[in-house]
Image (cartoon, rainbow, N blue to C red; front, top):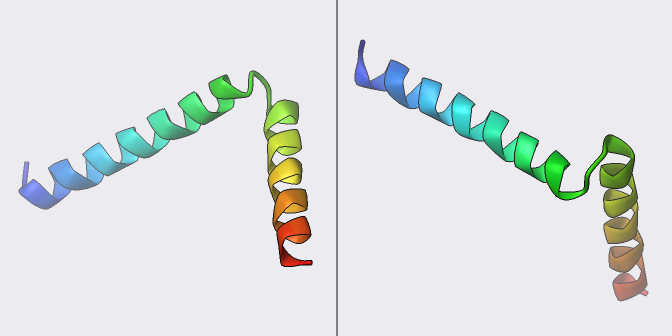
Length: 48
């Protein structure tokens, strides 16, 4: 296996792990949506 394939596989595993941890951190996909909505609202208030 070449180094580039190992790195590509490692990046894919880390991306999936990060996605899993982020969804677990807010418990549900609905919670993730609420977190994104809250972040958007905070950015909007900061821009005003």
